[in-house]
Image (cartoon, rainbow, N blue to C red; front, side, top):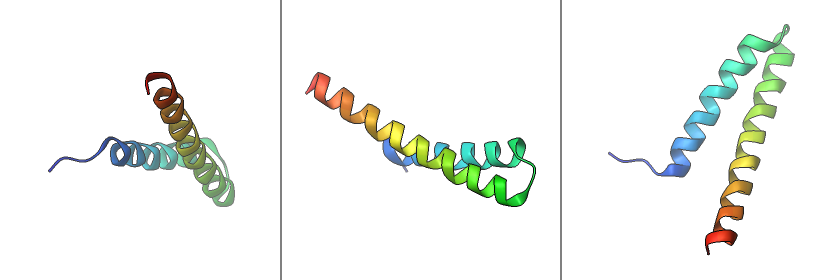
Length: 58
């Protein structure tokens, strides 16, 4: 079974966000909010980079 590049990026974003959230903050609330923040930033940056590459290469 092959997964798309976007699905692989989403899986990476989820796993990385969980690890960053668990290891970097003190309270559960801070961990949860930071995990969502990191996940959102991964998505925004990934989609932004994809659009930039699309516009450059057409």
